[in-house]
Image 1 (cartoon, each protein chain N blue to C red):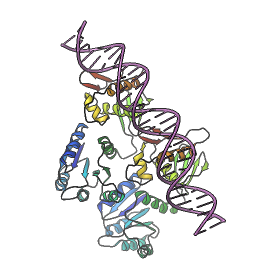
Image 2 (image 1 turned 135 degrees about the vertical axis):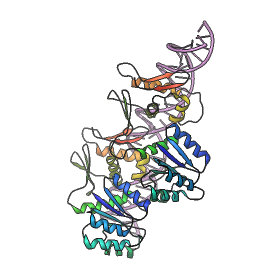
Image 3 (image 1 turned 90 degrees about the vertical axis):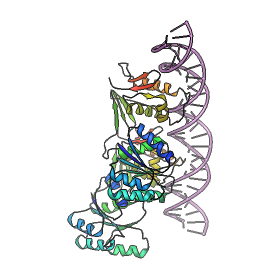
Length: 222
Length: 222
DNA sequence: AACAATCTTAAAATTTCCTTAAAAGATTTT
DNA sequence: AAAATCTTTTAAGGAAATTTTAAGATTGTT
Protein backbone atom coordinates (compact mmCIF):
# COMPACT_ATOMS: atom_id res chain seq x y z
CA UNK A 1 0.00 0.00 0.00
CA UNK A 2 1.38 3.34 -1.05
CA UNK A 3 0.86 6.57 0.88
CA UNK A 4 1.75 10.16 0.01
CA UNK A 5 2.40 12.54 2.89
CA UNK A 6 2.18 16.24 2.05
CA UNK A 7 3.60 18.07 5.02
CA UNK A 8 6.12 20.89 5.36
CA UNK A 9 7.22 20.30 8.94
CA UNK A 10 10.10 17.85 8.74
CA UNK A 11 9.45 16.57 12.23
CA UNK A 12 5.93 15.50 11.53
CA UNK A 13 6.62 14.08 8.10
CA UNK A 14 9.53 12.02 9.43
CA UNK A 15 7.47 10.80 12.30
CA UNK A 16 4.73 9.77 9.90
CA UNK A 17 7.09 8.22 7.38
CA UNK A 18 8.85 6.09 9.99
CA UNK A 19 5.68 5.05 11.71
CA UNK A 20 3.86 4.15 8.52
CA UNK A 21 6.81 2.29 7.09
CA UNK A 22 6.91 0.18 10.21
CA UNK A 23 3.32 -0.65 9.42
CA UNK A 24 4.51 -1.88 6.03
CA UNK A 25 3.25 1.05 3.99
CA UNK A 26 5.40 2.56 1.25
CA UNK A 27 5.64 6.26 1.97
CA UNK A 28 6.57 9.26 -0.16
CA UNK A 29 6.87 12.72 1.35
CA UNK A 30 6.25 16.06 -0.35
CA UNK A 31 7.35 19.13 1.58
CA UNK A 32 5.00 21.58 -0.10
CA UNK A 33 1.74 21.65 -2.02
CA UNK A 34 3.28 22.00 -5.44
CA UNK A 35 5.43 18.90 -5.03
CA UNK A 36 2.48 17.07 -3.53
CA UNK A 37 0.36 17.72 -6.59
CA UNK A 38 3.20 16.71 -8.91
CA UNK A 39 3.84 13.46 -7.08
CA UNK A 40 0.16 12.60 -7.00
CA UNK A 41 0.03 13.02 -10.77
CA UNK A 42 3.11 10.95 -11.45
CA UNK A 43 2.46 8.09 -9.05
CA UNK A 44 -0.54 6.09 -8.02
CA UNK A 45 -1.18 6.27 -4.30
CA UNK A 46 -3.62 4.31 -2.22
CA UNK A 47 -4.05 7.19 0.18
CA UNK A 48 -2.91 10.79 0.72
CA UNK A 49 -2.27 12.53 4.04
CA UNK A 50 -2.52 16.25 3.53
CA UNK A 51 -1.54 19.04 5.89
CA UNK A 52 -4.04 21.86 6.07
CA UNK A 53 -1.48 24.62 6.55
CA UNK A 54 1.12 24.51 3.82
CA UNK A 55 3.48 27.20 2.56
CA UNK A 56 2.54 28.39 -0.92
CA UNK A 57 -0.40 26.43 -2.22
CA UNK A 58 -2.83 25.72 0.63
CA UNK A 59 -3.90 22.23 1.59
CA UNK A 60 -7.43 22.89 0.40
CA UNK A 61 -6.15 23.95 -2.99
CA UNK A 62 -3.91 20.88 -3.23
CA UNK A 63 -6.92 18.75 -2.46
CA UNK A 64 -8.96 20.36 -5.22
CA UNK A 65 -6.19 19.93 -7.74
CA UNK A 66 -5.72 16.30 -6.93
CA UNK A 67 -9.45 15.70 -7.13
CA UNK A 68 -9.57 17.19 -10.61
CA UNK A 69 -7.40 14.41 -11.90
CA UNK A 70 -8.05 11.60 -9.47
CA UNK A 71 -11.50 11.31 -8.03
CA UNK A 72 -11.11 8.14 -6.04
CA UNK A 73 -7.92 8.28 -3.93
CA UNK A 74 -8.81 8.74 -0.24
CA UNK A 75 -7.51 12.00 1.23
CA UNK A 76 -7.16 12.63 4.95
CA UNK A 77 -6.52 16.15 6.20
CA UNK A 78 -4.13 16.75 9.07
CA UNK A 79 -5.37 19.88 10.69
CA UNK A 80 -4.96 22.02 13.77
CA UNK A 81 -8.40 23.43 13.08
CA UNK A 82 -11.44 21.69 14.34
CA UNK A 83 -14.41 23.95 13.82
CA UNK A 84 -17.34 22.61 11.93
CA UNK A 85 -17.06 25.12 9.14
CA UNK A 86 -13.42 24.30 8.45
CA UNK A 87 -14.23 20.64 8.38
CA UNK A 88 -17.11 21.15 6.00
CA UNK A 89 -14.78 23.19 3.84
CA UNK A 90 -12.29 20.38 3.70
CA UNK A 91 -14.85 17.75 2.98
CA UNK A 92 -16.36 19.98 0.30
CA UNK A 93 -12.99 20.23 -1.34
CA UNK A 94 -13.03 16.46 -1.68
CA UNK A 95 -11.39 15.12 1.47
CA UNK A 96 -12.65 11.86 2.89
CA UNK A 97 -11.69 12.47 6.49
CA UNK A 98 -9.65 14.74 8.67
CA UNK A 99 -7.73 14.34 11.90
CA UNK A 100 -6.93 17.04 14.38
CA UNK A 101 -3.35 17.70 15.46
CA UNK A 102 -1.92 16.63 17.75
CA UNK A 103 -3.20 13.14 17.16
CA UNK A 104 -2.35 9.73 18.49
CA UNK A 105 -0.55 7.72 15.86
CA UNK A 106 -2.81 4.76 16.56
CA UNK A 107 -5.84 6.86 15.79
CA UNK A 108 -4.42 8.02 12.51
CA UNK A 109 -3.70 4.41 11.66
CA UNK A 110 -7.27 3.47 12.44
CA UNK A 111 -8.59 6.20 10.15
CA UNK A 112 -6.23 5.17 7.40
CA UNK A 113 -7.53 1.64 7.63
CA UNK A 114 -11.10 2.84 7.44
CA UNK A 115 -10.30 4.59 4.18
CA UNK A 116 -8.32 1.72 2.74
CA UNK A 117 -10.82 -0.97 3.44
CA UNK A 118 -13.74 0.55 1.57
CA UNK A 119 -11.72 0.41 -1.58
CA UNK A 120 -11.49 -3.24 -2.42
CA UNK A 121 -13.74 -5.78 -0.86
CA UNK A 122 -10.77 -7.46 0.80
CA UNK A 123 -11.01 -7.76 4.52
CA UNK A 124 -8.23 -6.62 6.76
CA UNK A 125 -7.29 -9.46 9.06
CA UNK A 126 -4.59 -10.50 11.49
CA UNK A 127 -3.86 -14.13 12.25
CA UNK A 128 -1.85 -16.02 14.77
CA UNK A 129 -2.16 -19.73 15.46
CA UNK A 130 -5.84 -20.45 15.99
CA UNK A 131 -6.80 -16.79 16.42
CA UNK A 132 -8.13 -14.62 13.65
CA UNK A 133 -8.99 -10.92 13.98
CA UNK A 134 -11.00 -9.05 11.42
CA UNK A 135 -10.00 -5.43 11.77
CA UNK A 136 -12.82 -4.18 9.61
CA UNK A 137 -15.70 -5.90 11.32
CA UNK A 138 -13.95 -6.03 14.71
CA UNK A 139 -14.90 -9.68 15.02
CA UNK A 140 -12.53 -12.26 16.48
CA UNK A 141 -12.49 -16.00 15.90
CA UNK A 142 -10.80 -18.82 17.80
CA UNK A 143 -10.80 -22.06 15.85
CA UNK A 144 -13.34 -20.39 13.56
CA UNK A 145 -15.69 -19.86 16.45
CA UNK A 146 -16.49 -16.26 17.20
CA UNK A 147 -15.66 -14.78 20.61
CA UNK A 148 -16.80 -11.41 21.87
CA UNK A 149 -14.16 -8.89 22.93
CA UNK A 150 -14.58 -5.46 24.44
CA UNK A 151 -12.76 -2.56 22.77
CA UNK A 152 -9.82 -2.64 25.16
CA UNK A 153 -9.49 -6.38 24.88
CA UNK A 154 -9.56 -6.01 21.13
CA UNK A 155 -6.80 -3.45 20.94
CA UNK A 156 -4.64 -5.29 23.43
CA UNK A 157 -4.93 -8.46 21.37
CA UNK A 158 -4.28 -6.49 18.20
CA UNK A 159 -1.14 -5.01 19.70
CA UNK A 160 0.13 -8.39 20.86
CA UNK A 161 -0.46 -10.01 17.49
CA UNK A 162 1.07 -7.15 15.54
CA UNK A 163 4.15 -7.61 17.70
CA UNK A 164 4.19 -11.37 17.55
CA UNK A 165 7.59 -12.85 18.18
CA UNK A 166 8.63 -9.85 20.24
CA UNK A 167 8.23 -9.29 23.95
CA UNK A 168 5.77 -6.51 24.69
CA UNK A 169 6.80 -4.74 27.87
CA UNK A 170 4.24 -3.29 30.20
CA UNK A 171 5.50 0.15 29.33
CA UNK A 172 4.97 -0.35 25.61
CA UNK A 173 1.56 -1.86 26.18
CA UNK A 174 0.44 0.99 28.43
CA UNK A 175 1.76 3.48 25.89
CA UNK A 176 0.22 1.92 22.81
CA UNK A 177 -3.02 0.42 24.03
CA UNK A 178 -3.90 2.85 26.80
CA UNK A 179 -2.04 5.83 25.35
CA UNK A 180 -0.65 6.77 28.73
CA UNK A 181 2.85 8.17 28.65
CA UNK A 182 3.96 7.69 32.20
CA UNK A 183 4.78 4.91 34.54
CA UNK A 184 2.00 3.87 36.77
CA UNK A 185 1.46 1.21 39.31
CA UNK A 186 -1.82 0.11 37.88
CA UNK A 187 -2.60 -3.52 37.30
CA UNK A 188 -5.02 -3.08 34.41
CA UNK A 189 -2.68 -4.92 32.12
CA UNK A 190 -2.65 -8.01 34.31
CA UNK A 191 -6.41 -7.94 34.49
CA UNK A 192 -6.83 -7.60 30.75
CA UNK A 193 -4.31 -10.30 29.99
CA UNK A 194 -6.38 -12.47 32.27
CA UNK A 195 -9.60 -11.53 30.42
CA UNK A 196 -8.00 -12.32 27.08
CA UNK A 197 -6.56 -15.61 28.21
CA UNK A 198 -9.93 -16.77 29.43
CA UNK A 199 -11.65 -15.83 26.22
CA UNK A 200 -8.95 -17.19 23.93
CA UNK A 201 -8.79 -20.55 25.64
CA UNK A 202 -10.06 -23.19 23.32
CA UNK A 203 -10.84 -26.71 24.43
CA UNK A 204 -7.19 -27.74 24.25
CA UNK A 205 -6.72 -25.37 27.16
CA UNK A 206 -3.74 -23.50 25.82
CA UNK A 207 -3.64 -19.82 25.13
CA UNK A 208 -0.83 -18.30 23.20
CA UNK A 209 -0.12 -15.36 25.45
CA UNK A 210 3.10 -16.19 27.23
CA UNK A 211 4.42 -14.38 30.26
CA UNK A 212 8.06 -13.37 30.25
CA UNK A 213 8.52 -12.78 33.93
CA UNK A 214 10.02 -9.42 34.76
CA UNK A 215 9.74 -8.29 31.18
CA UNK A 216 6.29 -8.51 29.68
CA UNK A 217 4.15 -10.68 27.44
CA UNK A 218 4.67 -12.29 24.07
CA UNK A 219 2.59 -14.16 21.52
CA UNK A 220 3.90 -16.57 18.95
CA UNK A 221 2.70 -19.68 17.16
CA UNK A 222 3.64 -23.19 18.23
CA UNK B 1 28.56 2.88 17.06
CA UNK B 2 28.76 6.60 17.58
CA UNK B 3 26.50 8.55 19.92
CA UNK B 4 26.11 12.29 20.48
CA UNK B 5 24.95 13.44 23.90
CA UNK B 6 23.54 16.97 24.08
CA UNK B 7 23.23 17.80 27.76
CA UNK B 8 24.24 20.81 29.83
CA UNK B 9 24.41 19.21 33.26
CA UNK B 10 27.94 17.92 33.62
CA UNK B 11 26.91 15.24 36.09
CA UNK B 12 24.46 13.64 33.75
CA UNK B 13 26.60 13.93 30.64
CA UNK B 14 29.57 12.35 32.40
CA UNK B 15 27.43 9.58 33.73
CA UNK B 16 26.10 8.92 30.23
CA UNK B 17 29.49 9.18 28.55
CA UNK B 18 31.11 6.74 30.95
CA UNK B 19 28.26 4.29 30.90
CA UNK B 20 27.92 4.29 27.14
CA UNK B 21 31.63 4.00 26.57
CA UNK B 22 31.69 0.95 28.76
CA UNK B 23 29.07 -0.44 26.42
CA UNK B 24 31.53 0.06 23.60
CA UNK B 25 29.89 3.14 22.12
CA UNK B 26 31.97 6.11 20.98
CA UNK B 27 30.52 9.15 22.72
CA UNK B 28 30.75 12.88 22.03
CA UNK B 29 29.24 15.41 24.41
CA UNK B 30 27.86 18.85 23.55
CA UNK B 31 27.09 21.11 26.51
CA UNK B 32 24.55 23.29 24.72
CA UNK B 33 22.21 23.22 21.76
CA UNK B 34 24.39 25.25 19.45
CA UNK B 35 27.36 22.93 19.84
CA UNK B 36 25.08 19.96 19.51
CA UNK B 37 23.80 21.14 16.15
CA UNK B 38 27.34 21.90 14.96
CA UNK B 39 28.66 18.51 15.96
CA UNK B 40 25.74 16.74 14.35
CA UNK B 41 26.51 18.53 11.10
CA UNK B 42 30.21 17.78 11.16
CA UNK B 43 30.09 14.16 12.26
CA UNK B 44 27.95 11.20 11.43
CA UNK B 45 26.27 9.75 14.50
CA UNK B 46 24.31 6.55 14.81
CA UNK B 47 22.12 8.05 17.50
CA UNK B 48 21.57 11.31 19.38
CA UNK B 49 20.54 11.74 23.02
CA UNK B 50 19.00 15.14 23.48
CA UNK B 51 18.12 16.91 26.70
CA UNK B 52 14.76 18.68 26.63
CA UNK B 53 15.82 21.63 28.77
CA UNK B 54 18.92 23.29 27.39
CA UNK B 55 20.31 26.77 27.93
CA UNK B 56 19.98 28.92 24.81
CA UNK B 57 18.54 26.87 21.97
CA UNK B 58 15.88 24.51 23.33
CA UNK B 59 16.03 20.78 22.83
CA UNK B 60 13.00 20.88 20.55
CA UNK B 61 14.66 23.48 18.37
CA UNK B 62 17.88 21.47 18.24
CA UNK B 63 15.84 18.49 17.16
CA UNK B 64 14.21 20.46 14.35
CA UNK B 65 17.53 21.79 13.14
CA UNK B 66 19.12 18.38 13.09
CA UNK B 67 16.12 16.94 11.28
CA UNK B 68 16.41 19.58 8.58
CA UNK B 69 19.75 18.17 7.55
CA UNK B 70 19.59 14.60 8.69
CA UNK B 71 16.26 12.87 8.50
CA UNK B 72 17.27 9.39 9.52
CA UNK B 73 19.44 9.54 12.65
CA UNK B 74 17.44 8.29 15.65
CA UNK B 75 16.90 10.96 18.32
CA UNK B 76 15.94 10.16 21.89
CA UNK B 77 14.77 12.94 24.19
CA UNK B 78 15.81 13.01 27.83
CA UNK B 79 13.02 14.82 29.56
CA UNK B 80 11.68 15.61 32.98
CA UNK B 81 8.32 16.36 31.44
CA UNK B 82 5.84 13.59 31.03
CA UNK B 83 2.54 15.00 29.90
CA UNK B 84 1.03 13.70 26.73
CA UNK B 85 1.16 17.02 24.94
CA UNK B 86 4.86 17.49 25.64
CA UNK B 87 5.55 14.06 24.30
CA UNK B 88 3.57 14.68 21.16
CA UNK B 89 5.45 17.93 20.74
CA UNK B 90 8.73 16.13 20.92
CA UNK B 91 7.70 13.45 18.49
CA UNK B 92 6.30 16.10 16.16
CA UNK B 93 9.67 17.79 16.17
CA UNK B 94 11.12 14.58 14.82
CA UNK B 95 12.22 12.61 17.85
CA UNK B 96 12.00 8.84 17.73
CA UNK B 97 11.59 8.21 21.42
CA UNK B 98 11.88 9.89 24.76
CA UNK B 99 12.84 8.79 28.25
CA UNK B 100 11.78 10.42 31.47
CA UNK B 101 14.38 11.53 34.00
CA UNK B 102 15.40 10.09 36.28
CA UNK B 103 15.88 6.89 34.33
CA UNK B 104 17.69 3.67 34.98
CA UNK B 105 20.73 3.37 32.78
CA UNK B 106 19.65 -0.07 31.67
CA UNK B 107 16.35 1.25 30.44
CA UNK B 108 18.05 3.92 28.41
CA UNK B 109 20.28 1.24 26.96
CA UNK B 110 17.26 -0.85 26.03
CA UNK B 111 15.69 2.08 24.22
CA UNK B 112 18.93 2.82 22.42
CA UNK B 113 19.05 -0.75 21.24
CA UNK B 114 15.48 -0.55 19.99
CA UNK B 115 16.46 2.40 17.83
CA UNK B 116 19.65 0.81 16.59
CA UNK B 117 18.04 -2.50 15.86
CA UNK B 118 17.65 -3.50 12.27
CA UNK B 119 14.31 -2.30 11.06
CA UNK B 120 12.90 -5.39 9.35
CA UNK B 121 11.47 -8.37 11.08
CA UNK B 122 14.98 -9.59 11.74
CA UNK B 123 15.43 -11.00 15.17
CA UNK B 124 18.00 -9.58 17.47
CA UNK B 125 20.28 -12.37 18.69
CA UNK B 126 23.55 -12.86 20.51
CA UNK B 127 25.68 -15.96 20.05
CA UNK B 128 28.64 -17.49 21.74
CA UNK B 129 29.82 -21.05 21.22
CA UNK B 130 26.79 -23.29 21.74
CA UNK B 131 24.70 -20.56 23.36
CA UNK B 132 22.19 -18.45 21.49
CA UNK B 133 20.13 -15.64 23.01
CA UNK B 134 17.13 -14.13 21.27
CA UNK B 135 16.72 -10.66 22.71
CA UNK B 136 13.29 -10.15 21.18
CA UNK B 137 11.65 -13.28 22.48
CA UNK B 138 13.91 -13.52 25.54
CA UNK B 139 14.48 -17.18 24.76
CA UNK B 140 17.85 -18.88 25.21
CA UNK B 141 19.13 -22.00 23.52
CA UNK B 142 22.04 -24.30 24.31
CA UNK B 143 22.85 -26.64 21.46
CA UNK B 144 19.49 -25.59 19.99
CA UNK B 145 17.68 -26.79 23.06
CA UNK B 146 15.77 -24.14 24.94
CA UNK B 147 16.66 -23.41 28.55
CA UNK B 148 14.64 -21.22 30.88
CA UNK B 149 16.37 -18.28 32.53
CA UNK B 150 15.07 -15.83 35.10
CA UNK B 151 15.37 -12.11 34.31
CA UNK B 152 18.55 -11.67 36.33
CA UNK B 153 20.12 -14.75 34.85
CA UNK B 154 19.18 -13.47 31.42
CA UNK B 155 20.76 -10.07 31.84
CA UNK B 156 23.86 -11.47 33.48
CA UNK B 157 24.36 -13.82 30.55
CA UNK B 158 23.64 -11.01 28.13
CA UNK B 159 26.26 -8.87 29.80
CA UNK B 160 28.85 -11.63 29.75
CA UNK B 161 28.26 -12.40 26.10
CA UNK B 162 28.26 -8.76 25.03
CA UNK B 163 31.65 -8.53 26.71
CA UNK B 164 32.97 -11.81 25.41
CA UNK B 165 36.72 -11.99 25.38
CA UNK B 166 36.94 -9.36 28.11
CA UNK B 167 37.11 -9.97 31.83
CA UNK B 168 34.02 -8.71 33.62
CA UNK B 169 34.88 -7.52 37.09
CA UNK B 170 32.47 -7.87 39.94
CA UNK B 171 32.14 -4.13 40.12
CA UNK B 172 31.16 -3.82 36.46
CA UNK B 173 28.74 -6.69 36.78
CA UNK B 174 27.07 -5.25 39.87
CA UNK B 175 26.80 -1.89 38.14
CA UNK B 176 25.44 -3.13 34.86
CA UNK B 177 23.31 -6.06 35.77
CA UNK B 178 22.13 -5.00 39.21
CA UNK B 179 22.31 -1.26 38.54
CA UNK B 180 23.93 -0.65 41.91
CA UNK B 181 26.56 2.03 41.95
CA UNK B 182 28.43 1.20 45.09
CA UNK B 183 30.53 -1.62 46.39
CA UNK B 184 28.82 -4.12 48.53
CA UNK B 185 29.85 -7.28 50.20
CA UNK B 186 27.10 -9.35 48.71
CA UNK B 187 27.71 -12.68 47.10
CA UNK B 188 24.80 -12.58 44.66
CA UNK B 189 27.13 -12.67 41.74
CA UNK B 190 28.72 -15.92 42.84
CA UNK B 191 25.30 -17.40 43.28
CA UNK B 192 24.09 -16.31 39.89
CA UNK B 193 27.22 -17.44 38.12
CA UNK B 194 26.54 -20.78 39.70
CA UNK B 195 22.92 -20.75 38.49
CA UNK B 196 24.04 -19.95 34.97
CA UNK B 197 26.75 -22.57 34.89
CA UNK B 198 24.28 -25.23 35.89
CA UNK B 199 21.78 -24.23 33.27
CA UNK B 200 24.32 -23.76 30.50
CA UNK B 201 25.98 -27.11 31.08
CA UNK B 202 25.38 -29.35 28.13
CA UNK B 203 26.13 -33.06 28.19
CA UNK B 204 29.82 -32.49 27.48
CA UNK B 205 29.92 -30.92 30.92
CA UNK B 206 31.69 -27.75 30.00
CA UNK B 207 30.30 -24.30 30.46
CA UNK B 208 31.98 -21.32 28.97
CA UNK B 209 32.01 -19.05 31.97
CA UNK B 210 35.56 -18.96 33.24
CA UNK B 211 36.69 -17.60 36.58
CA UNK B 212 39.64 -15.25 36.65
CA UNK B 213 40.61 -15.45 40.25
CA UNK B 214 40.85 -12.07 41.99
CA UNK B 215 39.49 -10.28 38.93
CA UNK B 216 36.17 -11.51 37.68
CA UNK B 217 34.61 -13.72 35.01
CA UNK B 218 35.02 -14.10 31.29
CA UNK B 219 33.31 -15.91 28.45
CA UNK B 220 34.84 -16.86 25.13
CA UNK B 221 34.45 -19.57 22.54
CA UNK B 222 36.70 -22.65 22.45
C1' DA C 1 49.30 -25.28 56.51
C1' DA C 2 47.04 -20.95 56.52
C1' DC C 3 44.60 -17.69 54.25
C1' DA C 4 41.57 -15.72 50.95
C1' DA C 5 38.63 -16.23 47.18
C1' DT C 6 35.16 -18.75 45.16
C1' DC C 7 31.61 -22.35 45.02
C1' DT C 8 27.51 -24.62 46.63
C1' DT C 9 23.40 -25.14 49.04
C1' DA C 10 19.32 -24.17 51.47
C1' DA C 11 16.26 -21.23 53.54
C1' DA C 12 14.47 -16.44 54.10
C1' DA C 13 12.92 -12.34 51.96
C1' DT C 14 11.06 -10.12 48.29
C1' DT C 15 8.91 -9.35 43.99
C1' DT C 16 5.93 -10.39 40.34
C1' DC C 17 2.03 -12.19 38.57
C1' DC C 18 -2.59 -14.17 38.79
C1' DT C 19 -7.18 -14.11 40.25
C1' DT C 20 -11.23 -12.19 42.17
C1' DA C 21 -14.55 -9.07 43.54
C1' DA C 22 -16.27 -4.84 43.73
C1' DA C 23 -16.25 0.15 42.57
C1' DA C 24 -16.40 3.53 39.03
C1' DG C 25 -17.43 4.98 34.54
C1' DA C 26 -19.90 4.56 29.96
C1' DT C 27 -23.45 3.32 27.21
C1' DT C 28 -27.90 1.70 26.12
C1' DT C 29 -32.59 0.79 27.21
C1' DT C 30 -36.80 1.76 29.39
C1' DA D 1 -34.20 11.00 33.61
C1' DA D 2 -33.70 6.72 35.75
C1' DA D 3 -32.57 1.99 35.39
C1' DA D 4 -30.11 -1.62 33.49
C1' DT D 5 -26.20 -3.35 31.23
C1' DC D 6 -21.67 -3.48 29.79
C1' DT D 7 -16.84 -1.93 30.16
C1' DT D 8 -12.93 -0.35 32.55
C1' DT D 9 -10.26 0.38 36.59
C1' DT D 10 -8.85 -0.32 41.31
C1' DA D 11 -7.59 -2.99 45.13
C1' DA D 12 -6.25 -6.86 47.72
C1' DG D 13 -5.11 -11.66 48.94
C1' DG D 14 -2.61 -15.46 47.67
C1' DA D 15 0.42 -18.37 44.86
C1' DA D 16 4.47 -18.92 42.61
C1' DA D 17 8.78 -17.62 41.03
C1' DT D 18 12.84 -14.87 41.74
C1' DT D 19 16.34 -12.76 44.36
C1' DT D 20 19.11 -12.29 48.30
C1' DT D 21 21.32 -13.74 52.47
C1' DA D 22 24.12 -16.55 55.03
C1' DA D 23 26.98 -20.25 56.27
C1' DG D 24 29.76 -24.24 55.41
C1' DA D 25 32.58 -26.62 51.78
C1' DT D 26 35.98 -26.37 48.37
C1' DT D 27 39.67 -24.68 45.74
C1' DG D 28 43.82 -22.14 44.71
C1' DT D 29 47.87 -19.42 46.23
C1' DT D 30 51.66 -18.13 49.08
